[in-house]
Image (cartoon, rainbow, N blue to C red; front, side, top):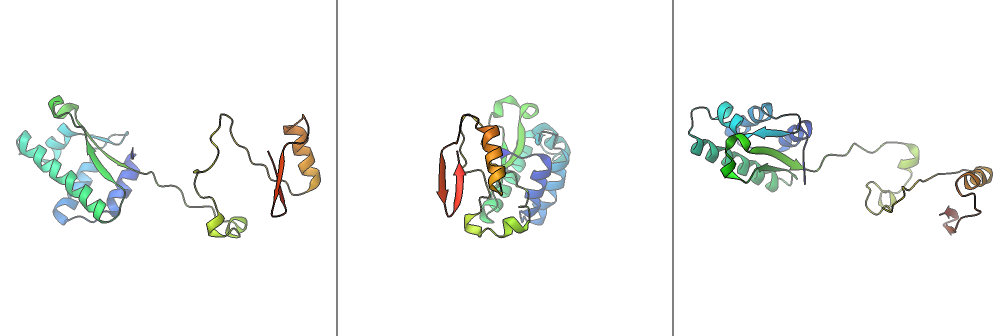
Length: 171
């Protein structure tokens, strides 16, 4: 999972149901987040646990992160609260971040896309060729357009073709 930007971390945390005592810590925690989505552990100690010793602030912070992770996991939310592992670095050099998938925008709604059965509609990039050259898909709607596109993009002659379900595919 990749580190989430501040907006996506906030949106993911809003969906996690936590006990009230933990839930009130979330806005405080998010308020300390930098533009890269990281939160400095020393800043958390100063802002959220100012009257605690370093050891008890670390214990409380670890408990908070553990509770977030357990609640997210139980609720089926793909989110993890992560913290720099190297405790010897000290609080000033340790960071917290939230990791998870970046939500994708909703699918476009068009008559053409709505006409495709859901099981046949490709909604992600898995299965798309990942060769050295980019893949470009050009749709043509009549014979003249097809010939013009082939002349322009495949000047050496007719490319390999395959016909499936009365549709011709040129490679």
